[in-house]
Image (cartoon, rainbow, N blue to C red):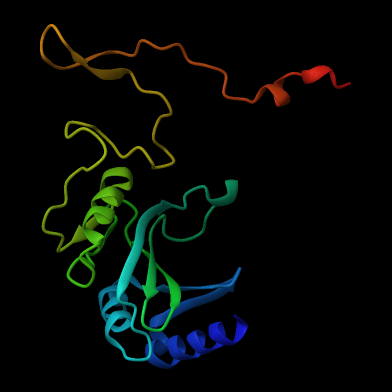
Length: 199
């Protein structure tokens, strides 16, 4: 495994050079971070270069680093992480890119490179508010079209004020005040000193 990672690392550094801002090896995987301005070019090179051949985008997700590991974070807040697979060369790489503007996170869409990015980018837009420039159908995919905000952002409120449900009598979706009581989210083993009879 180490020799294979050495080969992949050498190929990445040789082909991408200074476009790699950071390269990390951990738990048998390689992660590279690139600048937003280089993102599309790097993604194209990762797919097309004969030494790399990352034909498949396996996953793409958004991340909010504002409170990373419960500590203050220095740097851009929103990141897009892609997991790429080379079927022909049998290796994987994680590609990370940070959106330069926290107020309006925007990155290039990689749907022209990997069509599987379509729904993944819609999900990152819906949940984190990351805009993908060049995406042909960037709209919500998991939340309701009238939903306000992006629920995976760390500053999104934990409980809301309204809920929606289907009303069989009115034969439509309705909004109503939240009908559930807030509950204790601290596990019992933490909030009770003698849980389970242990002293």
